[in-house]
Length: 79
Image (cartoon, rainbow, N blue to C red; front, side, top):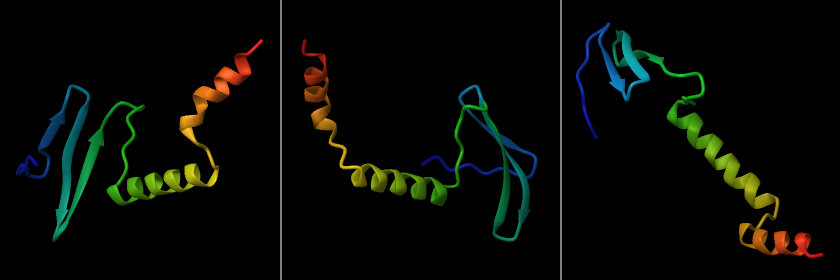
């Protein structure tokens, strides 16, 4: 993990297209501003983990078996 020290108004860059700026610091809370391309998805970690867990649950509940896709395609393409 890279650890950086920044003051209010200072930023860090990630690649060419993501900029994170320290907006405010109040006690133990830090407000960050994030500039990134619209197609870049940005989530708080707890929200990201919830989405990931719900996707896993949904995939399990459908009974979808990715290992059977190949056979299904072969069956559909038979003359």
